[in-house]
Image (cartoon, rainbow, N blue to C red; front, top):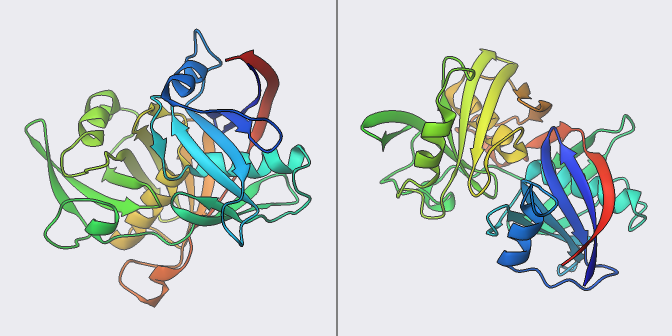
Length: 282
């Protein structure tokens, strides 16, 4: 079968995008792993599917598969690429679309300067909603990892995140701690591990070890989760520049984890780029 695809990236977090609006494609774990393989396939952190809407109010359905073949709930950099893809390929003429995901509805909006802003919905902080095993909600939780106790924040942006504040993201052992946090038994669906360095109230640096993909150059939901975690601790302002290895995102959220504005949406703004179009035999 000849499969048409588009290779895209958001700050180096790269994707194979497949639309199932005009072609029929059966996606399973083996196909995802093959396409994601950087030596024998196309190569990507995640595979994104553009499907017809299965929600009465949504324009499209958006599905995400990590490189290991597992389907996940949400991907912020992918959401920006999704919006750019459907607009550039003529599947919509709207600047703002409503997209159904496994985590609920999101609203990507294409801006005049070429950036894409995504309404990522509200953050979830209750342990049962993340999900995370804890007796009660707290701003920080002790997490036993390889004989040491880490102080992590737990946040869901539709997918689970553990955020650890560090002194310097350049020297933190992400390769060692990332897999241990990802697979910690207190996170029953595994977790994305974020390592955040606070530079100023409006500026952080961040590295993210993503479940099923390893460390990526950028993680949109990870940037949102880190900003929310910093707001809850009182470290960060309502608008924050997030510098990741692949580039910069701007995250806005008026809540603080303890007030009336906590139900407000997190807004993420950043680029989405097409690398190339192609076909592959699958």
